[in-house]
Image (cartoon, rainbow, N blue to C red; front, side):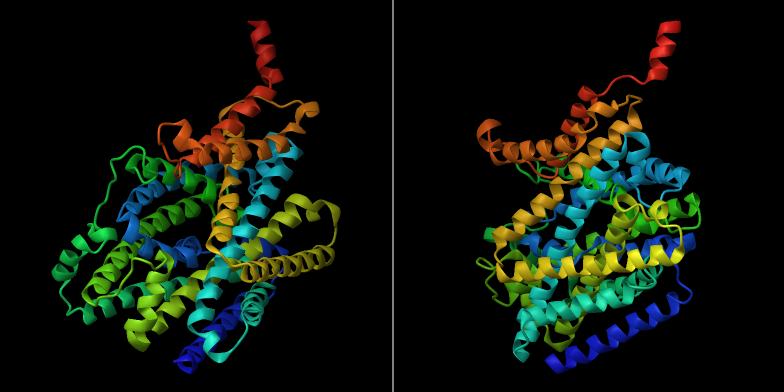
Length: 499
């Protein structure tokens, strides 16, 4: 089995490097950072599916059906609303300003302190979040594949990160756009083939599988429940929809990794077409993942597989490797690798862009293309080393609590970004230069306050549990704090005096 999987893995890597070789011809810094703004919108739309579905999503969405039923569909509905906001409000703003990094807007509107704060928040969030997501991909592959060959996890990690580093090093964003096309195809192929294999193993009757789902959930419950109506529960359907909307706005619209690909399109109109197409495909894909989760539970019930003490993230790989034969194991591995690579490669490029444009300001400090290229390559290499460092540290201290904490910390960083962008876009107030040092202070204090609030919400708020909506609370508190330290724009004051 291991030899079979490894052979296909080598074939997959060769395909990535062929794409790299084609897309990196005559590549320069514009190619790396913006894809020369010539990316076909339909290629970007399709490829972004893989970027948005990380390896964690690939495993956790089907697995979570066991405990949360189909209630994740509320989040998917929120995604639709969020992407509409991005297409109608944020994309026109970014294209109007012709930005390379989306955090340049914060510098233009609020000041350099906000610009630096936004870029640092993104850097920390993406580095930790993406590295941990990639680590979980590596961990699963290690347990089910490489441990059988007695290969240490640190070596597996080095090889995986080296592959991503090498195929993104020259072509940057242009290469990522086209490799994501390949990786999304493998990911969706794995999803569809797994569904087909399960159906075949269960006799091919969807009606029978659907009926089994009615008692396949946790404690024999119906896993097909779409909307939770308990307002105190963190999966309450209104929380899911509103939270999903703001998560999309913050973690896609205000995220350099995701928006950099949109900004590589030829025009605003193409970018909006991309967003609309991407949203439509993503909804269908998430519905398929939920259906896969239900089918896995039905399969487990029919075959007497005990899921009670199994972590939900292990349900999909456990069934794929032990019960679905070579075909099931193979497609799972390639779906997982594709999800991991498509999430990490864009992160390498986005973090390099953030450091080069937002922190080092290479376009202003270095006059020649050669100097800028040298700095960009050094930054790219250093980021890959940081990425690898986080993965190796996580592997040495692996436990579910550590991973949840790091993901939680990463998610909190988007609240200040949301608050700063709302302040910039929907008010005309200004923050005096002598008070701008408070911006990074607010960006640290408010998420800390939100953590305390979330930790004690059940005691303080009559059993209420925060879900995705905590991001909104975080953003609104940052917005209110910025309002408190700001003043009306001078132009407004002059108009008022004249009247």
